[in-house]
Every structure is written in C-alpha cells, then in structure tokens.
Image (cartoon, rainbow, N blue to C red; front, side):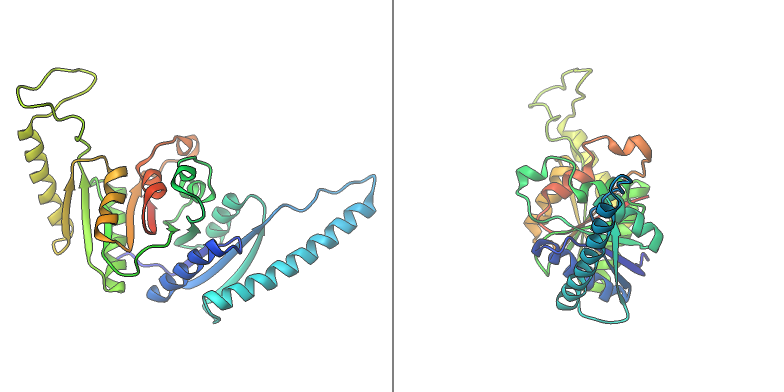
Length: 292
C-alpha cells in the first residue's frame, strides 16, 4: 500500500495554478496528509557596493513584495483549499523548478503537485516547462494537474519494471481511496512492426513480427497484468506507451493516469523523449509520474 503523508503544491498564483491547488487539496484530504503550498519569488537584486542606498531600497522593496505575495498566497489557499492546521504556506526565492524540488526535499514531501494547464498541445511538445523539469529532478512522485473528469477509472501503465510497478501500487491505492476502478495497460509498441500477410522479411535495423508473434505477446502480457491487479480492467495495446496511455485515458474518460519512469540521476535526466514526459504532454487528465 502506497500512502502520502505530505503533499507539496507549487503555485504561481494564476487561475491555471488553482487547478493544481484544488487537486492537491483533494489528494491531501483522501490521504489525510499535510498540504504545503509553495510559491517561488524571483531572486532578490544583488548588492551594489558603490551605491549602497540602491541596495537598501531594493531590499526594502523585495521585503514589501514578499509581504504582498504571502498575503495573496494565504488568501488564494483559503479560497481554493480552505484553512486548517493541515495547510502550510511557504515562500522561496529562485528558479521555480529548482526551488520546488529543493523545498519538497527539505519538507520531506512524498508527493509534489504542479500545474500542467495553460498551454496548447503544440506548446506542450516543447520541453523546458516547470512541470517537465520537476518530473526530471524530483525525488518524489509528481502529480501534474490538468482539468479532466472527476469520475472514471484510474489508468496505470506498466512495462513490468520496478518503476512501473511502483506506479501501479499508487494507482491501486488512490483508486481504493477515491472509490474508482483501475484500468491496467501494457503497450507492446509493435503497430509499425507487423508485416503484411506472408513470411516475415528480415530487416536487421527494424525487427518484424508475425501475427502469431503479436497474439502470443498479447496473451503473455494479459497474464502478467492479471497477476498484478486481479480485479482491474486489463488492456494490451499495440501502440507505443506514450501514445497508448493518453488515448486509453481519453476513451475511458479516466480521472488519472499513473506512469513510472526510470530513476536516472545527473546528466541522464536531461535526455529527452521518455514515456512519462510524452504521456504528460498529451494526457487528457491529471498524471502521476513516479520514479523508483
């Protein structure tokens, strides 16, 4: 059973960020977890030794800005998530994605919620958004908020690795608490590899599959899925997972997608094209990305 005890939600005080705040409050309520709401201010101006009066004025202005933002943050949290001892408001200074990750680690948050709204699909395909950077570097699962159905199943994707099995565990527990069903999906990624009727053609650079091969793979995957979550709906898709999971979530009107990603560190996290990032870009509902 995978549970959350502290949820950190990042907000830039925009209307789109309210979607993330509302969903973070809902998750915190389901798990009876503490909710930490975080906002990152731009870095304060550097000191200027030749003109100390300018530095003093800049610092006083920054303190006033902090006060105004903190007041606005408390008001927004009260309006969207409500007040209570379970809610804490925190301000940081610096690059948003770096401060979100750092603050989550310091607070020992076991779920980070960030906004995924506000950009069309074309813009989402360009990497560098705060949500995608948080996914790459966060130590904890990341919930990327997006408007979607409030009912419907929880879709969990798995390739039967440790990382994806962790995502399945999260999906099962969330579905139990939310009173939802689980749809478990494995994607074969063979839609372009099946040759036309006849013998398979040898293409060393592009392996091919016969129809019998695909039928066998579907059967084996179905058996593995049923062993993971016996009472779930089981789906074996021919497409690649980055396309199959958003399409399945759209078809089932899912409330949430859960997907795992490998626990790379350092420069390896900068590599583009991971399944998790593709799912986040194109999902029709919130997505939880977990690393193991």
